Length: 176
Image 1: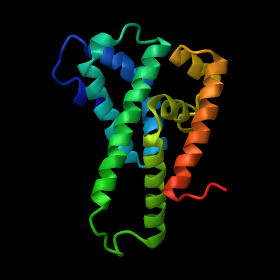
Image 2 (image 1 turned 60 degrees about the horizontal axis):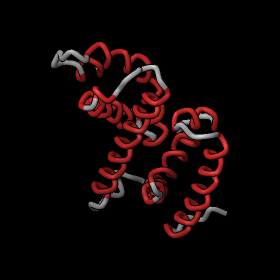
Image 3 (image 1 turned 45 degrees about the vertical axis):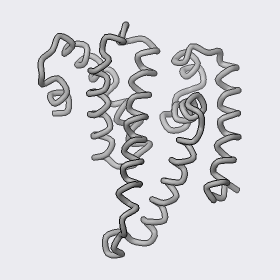
Image 4 (image 1 turned 60 degrees about the vertical axis):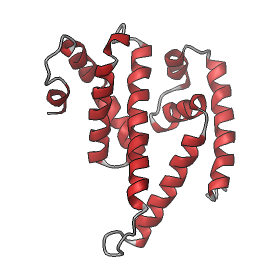
């Protein structure tokens, strides 16, 4: 099982890792899947996220806090983006038509363009977009996670959407 792979070296932090997995594992999987749209890649992103979390386990205070929740979600988001980048590098190799149909190839290319546009946003902007639209958090929840006022989060979302629309246009994606 995934948790066994992460805690197989039996350090002192196993109980905290297990608690984080129990509390946030499903949420992390959902977040990764919403970005990657692939079950196996989402599972890989969650597993790699827990390896990263284990490296920095001493930075986690209260495992039930909003800060911890924001941290684990940002780690899985970063891992998901790494997987998208890896896909893009692999896709640069010639594809055979029998392996990937034209429709699927066009969808993958458009998703890559969207991912590139998201990655070009400053971190503060891409984080609020990911939390709000990919992970489905409310503005109140995002404000608590980021220690910001609700008004500041609304303003950041608005700025993020404007900048994101500009970047999508630069990528050649028609946003209507």
